[in-house]
Image (cartoon, rainbow, N blue to C red; front, side, top):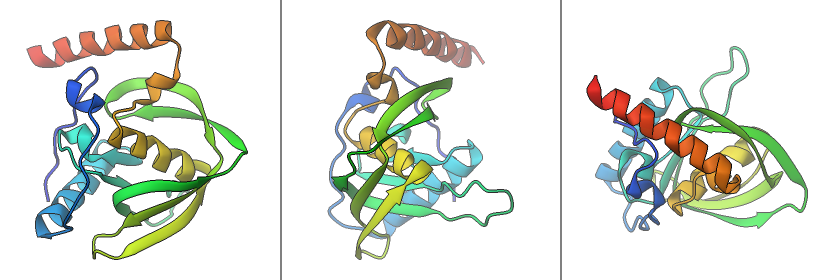
Length: 173
């Protein structure tokens, strides 16, 4: 497995709609494994293929954060929300592509998601709590949407200036 570089906002690849995965083959399975390793190394609870410069509808997540809880990785090809609750939840979100930035975002409290697993099998499950927030956040990435897109224009501009400065600093290193 490999740890992959994560794109930092602003990057035009983060704003593109990802392509459907037409075949869950060995290459796509390897990419998913590498993404999980990258996510755990970062550390994060979710990662979408566009964040590593790959235009595939592929996300990985693991929101098992309780002390001593075993990892509970989940890999989703072509995930889509097929139902969302009317109830809303506010959760402080961050993003591996927007380092050191968090904001309270309101999303549906529960969602039902359909996807294809690494074996090529169709799956469907209901998510709530952090899992619901995370899966929606990662699916947004597949549609070229960042969590800061839910913020005011002024807040987005401030965050974008900060991440541009960070990218310049990282380029010098």
